[in-house]
Every structure is written in C-alpha cells, then in structure tokens.
Length: 579
Ligand SMILES: Nc1ncnc2c1ncn2[C@@H]1O[C@H](COP(=O)(O)OP(=O)(O)OP(=O)(O)O)[C@@H](O)[C@H]1O
Ligand SMILES: [Mg+2]
Image (cartoon, rainbow, N blue to C red; front, side, top):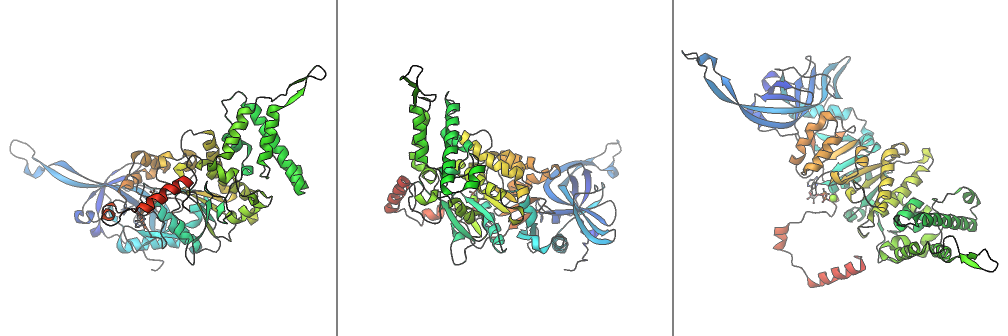
C-alpha cells in the first residue's frame, strides 16, 4: 500500500443519503438496499464533508426500517384527492468519529479524530470497506510509530485490515477491559501478555483470581512467571508461594483488620497498637544496626517485628497495675481491662488459618531483607511478566490481600528513583471482587483506597491499572472513571451498558448500542490509544487461559464423574488447597 493511496467514493457506489443531522449522530436513508443487508452495526460509514476533499467518518450504530406515507401527486384524481402510498425506508444512524481529508494544506490523505463539520442534508454516504478500508487502516497505522504498535486483531468489517492500538497510550492512563462472562476478556488479557512478551522488559503483574492463567507460566518458553498467594494449608517455603507478613500492613490496614470501631475502647486500643508497633519496629531496626532507618522510619514503614511480642505487650497493658495514691497500694493501670477484647480478637485472627499467609508465614519471611526479595520478584523485569494466583485465598479476605499487595508495590515503585523506574501495569482480573462499587467493610475500604490512589496518582509514577471485569456496574466508579481507554466486549446487562455509556465521551454514546450485539472475542476499542474506534475481532492468543466454556450437552454424553475425584475434592476443600 502506498502512502498516497487516496480513498475513493464514486457517486454510483453511494450507500445512502443524509436526511437528518443532530449533535450526536447522522441519519441517512439507504439507496443501495442490497448493500445495506451485507453490512453490520459497527461498520464504518463516510459522508461527504463541507468540501470535496473532506469526508466525515463514523460508525454505523443502528439500522431501522419504517414505512412512510408518500403522496403520489401525479395521480391526483378529479375530486382533488391525493392518493398516498406507504413506502418502505431503510434508515441508518451513524456516530461521527473522525475526519478524513484527501488534501489537507500541503499534506494528502490525513485522518484526525473528531468531526470538524457536519454533513449536509441530502449529501451522500458510503460504506468504507474493501480497498478503501485497507487504505484507511494503512493510513491510521502509518500515523503510529511502529515501536508503539500493539496489534490486537482484525477489523470485523474487513479481516484483512489490522487493528492496531498505541501501546503507550493504552497503558499510560489506565485501561479497562469490560464484557459479560464468556465474552473473551481472559483471552484478551492472554493476548496482550503475549504481545508484551515480545518486548525486551515487559513489566506487568496479573492478579489472577481463578488460577486460569497458569498455562501461560508453563512450557519451555513461558510467557510469564508464576506466583501464588500461599493457601491456608501451606507451611513450606515453596519459592513461588507469596506471603504477606503482618508487618507489611500500615496502621490503617491493621486497624481495619483487627479493631472493632464500635467498641468504646477502640481509640485506646488503636493508640496502644500504634505505640507498641512503633517501639517494636524501632527496637528491630536498632538490633539490625540500621541506624539511619531507625532515625527516619514511621510507624507505617514496613519493618519486621515480632507478633508474639506485640500481643504480650498489649496483654501487659491490659493487666497493668500501678502504684496507688497511698504508699504500698496498687490500682489498675490506665489501660487495664480496656484491651481485653482487642487482644482476644487479635489472637483469634492470628490463629485463623485463613490468614496464614499473613500471620503465620515461615520463619524466613520475617527477615529484614525479605522485602528486598519481594520487590525483586514482583517489580523487577528479570522475571518478566508476573502472574499471581489468588485462587486459594478465601473470598472474604481477598480485598485486603490484593489491596495490601497493590499498596506495597505502589509504594516501592513510588520510592524508586525516577530515572530508574520501568513503568508497570497491574492487571486486575475480576476487579469487581476487590474493587467494589458502593460502601464496603473497613478492610475492603482500605483495599479500595490503595487502588483508587493508583488510579488517581499512578500516571505520574509510571504505574497503571488494567481493570478487567464482567460487572462494570459493581466496580468502583472512581477507578473506572480514571480509565482513559476501554476495550469493550459483548455486554448484555443493561446496568453494565449504562455504566460503560457514561464513561464514554458524549459523541460516542451511540456506540454503546452495539455492545450487546458483539460476538465472542469481538470488541470495540475506545479511547486515545485508538484513533478510530471500531468493531474488531481480537486475535486468539497462542497459549489460552483455562477458562474454557464447557460443552454441557456434549460432556454429559462423554464424561463420567469418578467417586475418587469427589473424595479428593472434599479433602481439598477441607485443606483449602488443591495441592
Ligand atoms: N478472541 C476470541 N476468538 C474466539 N473465541 C474466543 C475469543 N475469546 C474468547 N473466546 C471463547 O470464549 C470463551 C470464554 O472466553 P474468556 O474466558 O476469555 O471469557 P471471559 O470474558 O474472561 O469470561 P469470565 O468473565 O467468565 O471470566 C473461550 O473459552 C473461547 O472459547
Ligand atoms: Mg475471565
């Protein structure tokens, strides 16, 4: 394809004629009915613009048919009665997206986002397909530096034309991948990871809720490195198992997890917790010979300390007796009896095996250097793309786990010297599970805070989110509204469509109408990473996630359930581990 290949729109190939123009869309009446039956919602339509070198390009978002009564003036009978005839009209509605010019000042063949003018009523329109579509797509990809190109798939309207996104822009200011269950989100994630893998130092961390990306971490040349949050049944130190020891929690997180704010003594409890944690951290730093850190650290600094010691100091407060007013007499200390419930709740948490990854990690997870190791594993580019399997984390503690991890990663990244920072993207699969909309418990709120902070400030520090969800209406609005790019797959639920519609710029609202009509693996790309939002078919990833849609009917004819497998399942449930 040569650079100067001009799109051609001959009059005799016109699809229709404009009859109504409003701010959001243009309506045309079809003149080529046969052609209309061969194009679908999402096809690109070009209108003659304000002069002969200008065309406005938009996306077909609705086709309707109506009957219009038309007067047949030639047949007026003697009584003066005008006969009417019902005429069938095929109407198409198009959302304008961009402006193509054959000549633009000194340049030829340019395309820019946004419509500079509106088509005139009665002007012609054409389907952009075949050679024209290829030329247009060629033009769009020429405008994009090859280094930035992220190939996502092919255009539905013309499978020979490649759909390419600007990889920089897609990740720069957060993106969202939204679609109903089974619409192809996980496959799309796998595809993006596969493309990123081709780069020298891809830095992405996938929060994998169901362990469905495991195949990407296997084989001779795995796409990603696998980690998992240690399950409740675990006690060994497998090097892929991640623990999040209690000392990583900041005060707010600790309080959210351990404190009952409705209790009258809650302020005393919080104060003593902070006091002891600070002292214990300080003692540890001194013991480690970290003089400099000891003089600068805050109570929230992630410094290891002994949990047993913390509890025993809180117990000491709770039982403390001090000398009374009379010599030799004793009276209850200032916190005597005020921490009993707190200490009990804390001990119960610590013994709760579900929190094993936090309160009962193996010995070597409490060393001063342990956090250095975690940073190298998760933020370093040597391991490449990282997939963290959360599938064995009990659902009620999931938000806290994901939230703490995200915050710690964000903070380490934040404190990296700017020139030494390789940008990183956190891929949040099934985001509605831990980035919920609406009020949640104290622990969930803390988790949400970490992500909302990344959504708001991450751009400056080169850390971004790729939010993946089947229920956009259940995902934090703060997080979603910070996303600048959307990969919208089939979305059937009304509420979810409404959310996506609200996130779109006004001019594109009409596109939301196409969302329920998309096929599996089809998407509409919206945002600054794509010059022209259109319907595309995402490429199939080479290595597929294990998220297959099961063939119920077929399998009922093929696969029997073995008793032994059920016994194993019950035992796995008891141990909370498949291993
Ligand atoms: N690009 C594609 N081309 C063809 N088929 C696809 C494509 N993407 C997904 N599929 C099919 O759809 C099935 C479900 O896809 P996927 O697991 O990605 O859905 P999902 O949106 O992640 O669903 P969930 O929200 O339940 O996790 C796949 O097993 C595959 O058969
Ligand atoms: Mg999925």
